[in-house]
Length: 443
Image 1 (tube, helix red, strand yellow):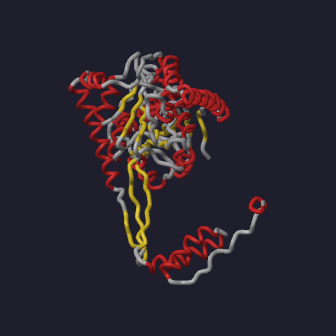
Image 2 (cartoon, rainbow, N blue to C red):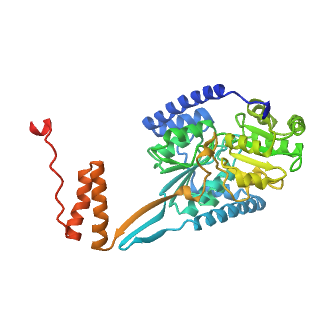
Image 3 (cartoon, rainbow, N blue to C red):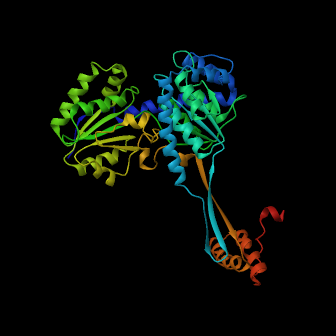
């Protein structure tokens, strides 16, 4: 039986925080719906201290951000973007249009059609997370989206130059210096100067995630990507306490609500890792953020076996799962609920976050039970079509369709089939019985 040596906040405490976020977001989106640009501007001033007439960056501002990069900075960004583009293209190439004659005279098919307008959010309030620009903009462009809009909050009182440069180098068509609810609302709802998009993608804080949730249906979304979650599955063979602690703290520095969990099969390893966490928190430059997250949302779980660790890991359905055990392949073969796996101690979540090529926009809050992360397929609509080539095929399908419609009581549906059976099959099929008169028709 597994033992929790450390637990995070209770479900009730988290639910109360979620309720407060929902209310704030609902009111903010309603304001954008009503007042458009004025509401967006007021929120930008209130939440980011950022005021300007037009939040869309000019071509000159964008070029200045690109030009501000050192040769090494540009080379590093281009390397990361090349990896993301390569893997996205591999994914796109795996998705084929199909057309097949399923029976004589009946042709069925589907086409993978790019979404017309994608809105990409790039978080950057605490840190200028330019990697999110690669993950969303490039993936959308590889999918073939003709219009890609990006929003990122200002950083230290001005557009984040590295984010802007990454957005531009990735191929964004419109770049806005907007953050938070106001950015999500402006892209989805639209304003006097911002045309709405068809899908919203990208990670963000609890307010961004909730705004996407509330707007889902009005627009598509990639997934619910809230505060970063990390699960480290480790044992004494595949890892050591310093590395496990480093990999947990490397992710919980995202913010005070980022869960970090250690799952192991060794009491000794668990205790030593907790000691290492405390030691590293004394020297980590971002310890202020990391400590709050660790104290409020950190957990340490000791299981009895790999099988029990697997069971717990699937129940947690974490966004990032780093496996550093004697047999990482066991988890690859058997685990079903995760955003992304990082197998063995030679890799880590940071590689996936920044540079290796897989997408870092991943499901949180147990959404990994039913979805994977952002990929090129999220920007494509797989749309079916059908074609009937012969009279004989239409009449044959029509006979079946007619009888099935009768089972359901759909006379009008049935007549769509019957008229073709008559015309193309030469059969004298009676017209459906007249509808019984209603009080309204009698009157």
